Length: 70
Ligand SMILES: [Zn+2]
Image (cartoon, rainbow, N blue to C red; front, side, top):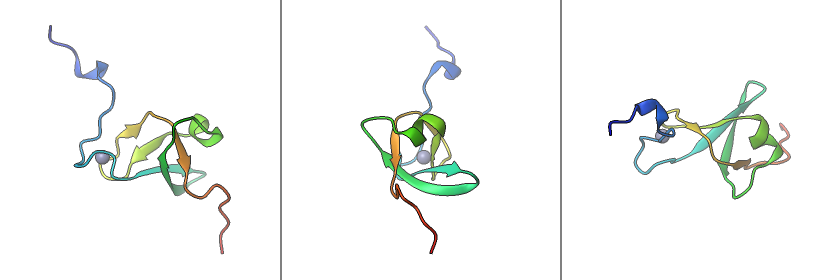
């Protein structure tokens, strides 16, 4: 039958989908990439598509695990 749009999982509308992912940790945006398993960060924070802003519900990992500002 006709389902409600709210029941569908969030889908990226970019072409190609999920061109890039990012997460905001303590006010700073960090680039992230899909990961086969959840990390400590992905369990605490939610990543999103940098193109359309759709929340990425899958697991991800940060590109720079030990980020240090210059
Ligand atoms: Zn997108």
